[in-house]
Length: 374
Image 1: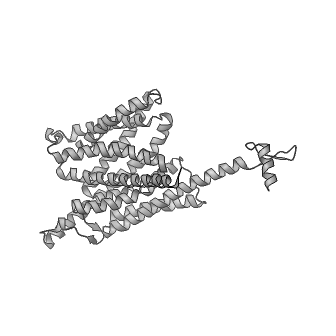
Image 2: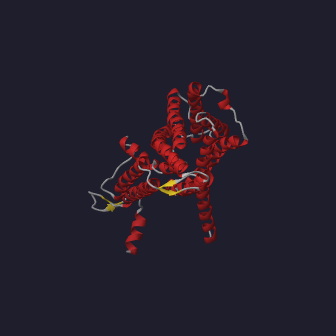
């Protein structure tokens, strides 16, 4: 492969990562616009997951015919629980948090998911914690930084840094003070809901790992998760959204937000993220996560007229630092573990009877060649 083609591949990968964060950022803004239009917090995810199911279902059926293990009642129960955690609780808490807080801090809080996932996996002994090694220490410190940042965002709003003209045009100082008081009143609840969203997301990731070992057909698993998620939201809607008017798409704008959530956020993003992970690994994708927060902050100020406060900025910085520490620790752990395995395979073994050194994975001719070169 030529140098020019290597650069071209790297550029494609970087552009794909940036595009992925743009699409994610757009979803935060589109979801907030949908809520501002009055779309129900229950109806919106139902439509989103129905579109995702229609998109992913046929692909799963045709592409994974040979990979699908036989379905059992136990697997269906696990799919149901995955949907409860990864779809219903995850998306429900997200929309509630987004309604009371802002897209910027929803994106910022999501940066803490890798750290929360690490804590859950370590508590369930699915993740090893080498506290005496630098990788283990980095993951622990990163987790503390993420939790600290999320706490700062929740409990401390701080002075106003940027006031958008979209929100303040034609308003008096007294009106701004009233808006600020109402915003502070709802802010804590919004951040608590977003923290619940992150907990649900992390729990879904942890629970998904053992299920995938039993059922490795990823598209089919995702389709079943969407299906059970729709059923669960329909049960909730039967109690809280009985008004038929709430189910109607009343404008082109509402239709576009629902289509973006279903087609782009659940379809295109899924495919693009899978391609990026295949090309560069999950760590490379995770490292670009804070770019999404910056994009959301800019879009929210320009499109929604959101305001920026110092508490959110400080908390976001802590979460971003924690994210990088956890990702670096995970990457370093994989490198050290693979190095240890390689050393075990290449280290010569002492034959007690002959007194000669032998390696079970290296031929005698290779060893002779090494000794001649030395």
